[in-house]
Length: 249
Image (cartoon, rainbow, N blue to C red; front, side, top):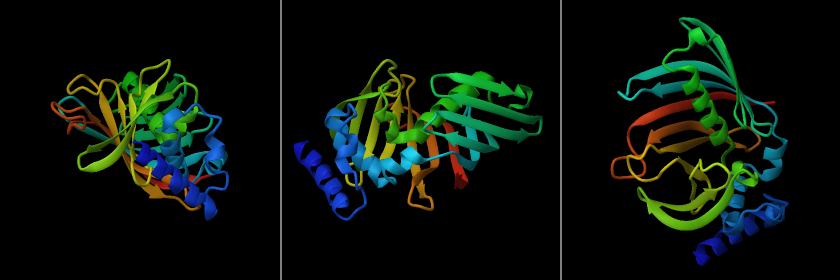
């Protein structure tokens, strides 16, 4: 474990030397990251850098959201998303066969919805939960710089053939449970939510990425699955969101 942390520190120091992270580790010293500081810093710097994310305005994108019921029936909906991660707000507008609905979710739980009769495949409560998950997962490792989530135990493990660093989370709210980072590049690969024991009602969010103009790394697809019967990452999907035409204001 010590060798892993030293390796991550070395990688960040190298990026500082070539000018990729001018503020380097000093920018993270004021946060209560503990043993997770090297991997969290590496993840943020590899995705564009702390300064760039702090300056990020509103992100607009086209989203294809697919939600699945307990029988794995899929409901697909094309939506327009407006995301303000620094202010903690996600707004969605969608047109369905039943009409147009608009919803806004704010970090902390604030939720509003108009046109609920136009919803397809989910209830207002399910939509609120989906938006909570999306706003949180889109913020990625930046969540760990907030007081509501404190990194705890850090461990190195292999999962599905991938070398990962698991960072458990503690705080006022027990969810999410842990972040899983690529041990080599530092990128966030997964986030678990709820119990990690098989078939106990937890979920895992899996990431794939795209690079935006300017070098910011933004999710291309977020896939939320239920924990499996015998493994952490199951096959039963809860939700999948694919982002395209991403624009940063």
